[in-house]
Amino acid sequence: MKGAPRSEQFDDVYFSAQDGFAETLHVFLDGNDLPERWAGKERFVIAETGFGTGLNFLAAWSLFEATTAPNQKLDFISFEKFPLDREEIELHLQPWKREFPELLATLLKKYPLLVPGFHRAALSERVSLTLVFDDVNKAVAQLETPVDAWFLDGFKPSTNPDMWSATVFENMARLSKEGTTFATFTAAGEVRRGLGTAGFDVRKVPGFGTKRDMLTGTFKGLDQEGLNQGAGK
Ligand SMILES: C[S@@+](CC[C@H](N)C(=O)[O-])C[C@H]1O[C@@H](n2cnc3c(N)ncnc32)[C@H](O)[C@@H]1O
Image 1 (cartoon, helix red, strand yellow):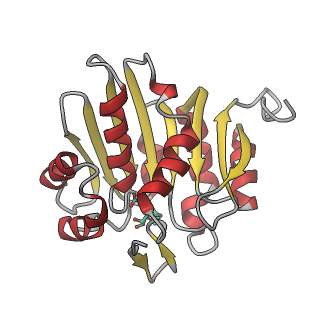
Image 2 (tube, rainbow, N blue to C red):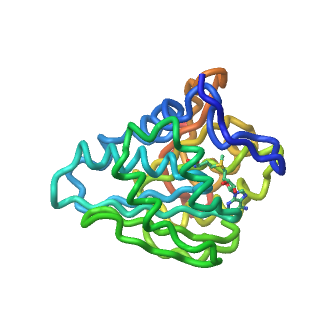
């Protein structure tokens, strides 16, 4: 059993206390059908709500290195309102440092100062990380990059409703294209409905560990009456 850092403010853990890395693989990577979805694409963009320790990012980067060709690039964008500092990240990721020793060292080296705003860093020739230290509701409206996959990881909706707002879902729709996917650890009804209203085809699938369900889905868009194109198909 591995422990997990916890937020008192939101009464939730940053990742599963059972095994955070296995949770990331199940929820966010398998949930977005990776690596299949980035196969053959020259550029793939992932956007995440809640960078936290960077565990999801490191797992995605590691999988990208293992499964892509030299001409492929990954752009990872993550929103974080309450950034951890470098020492906290290093401490919390100790249990998995053998999974990606060099990638973790590079992340720690390039991790920005905790100053609000957009911070973009080239972590390798093929992988860039844009950390946005701000409230996602404010910052997501400033993003203009089309997104291929969303990782929704912002503490549970019951204690952190801000992370699951109509503003977030509407901007997700604005930045998504046909085939864009999302995955999240929660199966809360308001998240299911919010993403459906924004134009995502939402599926309830088995969750990780003790969580019975989670959500995944694909962007279908809205028709002229504002109805979900994927609903009922
Ligand atoms: C469950 S943790 C994310 C775990 C992370 N993905 C990882 O790999 O460690 C949720 C994160 O969302 C951040 N957060 C909470 N409310 C936010 C908001 N309104 N805007 C941006 N980030 C927020 C928290 O500070 C926390 O780091």
